[in-house]
Image 1 (tube, rainbow, N blue to C red):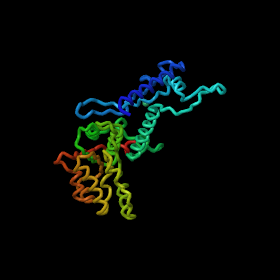
Image 2 (image 1 turned 60 degrees about the vertical axis):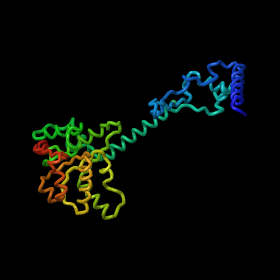
Image 3 (image 1 turned 120 degrees about the vertical axis):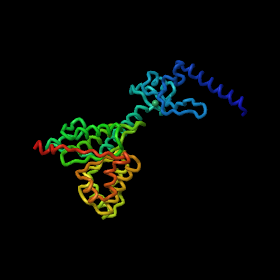
Image 4 (image 1 turned 45 degrees about the horizontal axis):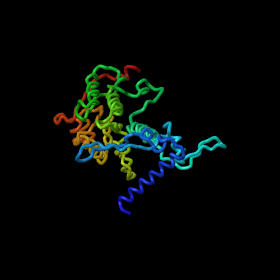
Amino acid sequence: MNEMDSLAKSFELLGNYKKRFAEAGIPKDLWYITEDMECQNVLSSFFMPGTGEIIEDRCLKLLRNHPRTKEYLSAHGYQFYDIETGEMVSVKKAAFCNCDEIIQQKQLIDKYDTIRRYRDANLPQVVRGKIPRSSINATFENFAEREGAEAAFEVASDYTVGNAPSILVFIGGTGTGKTHLLEAIGRQYLEQDHENGTPYTVRYELVSNMLRELRESFRIKSEESVTAHAYNADLLLLDDIGAEKPSEWVEQELFNLIEDRYRNNRLLVMATNEVEPTIKAKLGDRIASRLFDSETGTVKQVYLTATDYRAGIS
Ligand SMILES: [Zn+2]
């Protein structure tokens, strides 16, 4: 059959089709699925190379709730009205649009991702019924103003808007508020998105815990990486670094983690009770040289001199 013949055949089929509907007394607006009966959701769009034209891929499936949908389905034999039961009975499966379901599924997935992102951040959670400090999550809003911490508060809030070097080190005694600021930065970043719209990931590590887990993993030769979250997160928080002297292998692991942030200009906030000589003695020259680097502009040391406010309220 040549092209002309096949075209003629198509017209003939179309003619028969129209005739059949006309004879059956089906109104014209039910002969085809009209544009308004189709879902116009844009599923994806892309630039046509060369022309720069935007091509949109639309859903175009039948809307379940359109006023003419039921009639259309009856007219086309998808369903019929059962006089005995008084119900519509489906015969053929219609290809309905399910955009609403897809949106709901996506919202569920987003919600789950958010829960997982907050869980993986590992930020200290509140313990109810204890002293006031531990009954709330540390944020910028509930940071109690205290003498000697004003500058640190400023630097911390600047940091969350990218207005600071990529590495911060809070240095100060117990109760000066450095851990509070560390956590506040973490919670602030969890609420923020990258420029491309993807949310920030955060990882908090109490260094003594992480070092213990590293020792354990070394001892039992665990394949599971203790530091995977710490490496992957956009922002890493290392709390109370220098509280103990680790083994050589663990020290190396800790150095690698810090060095990755240092070399690649990635976000890292640390808090320590210790001064430079103590860090040197406990964690070695290399880690100390990163924490107290004041020449490259990569690291900013922030000293907190406030007196122990926990002592003040007890
Ligand atoms: Zn749709």
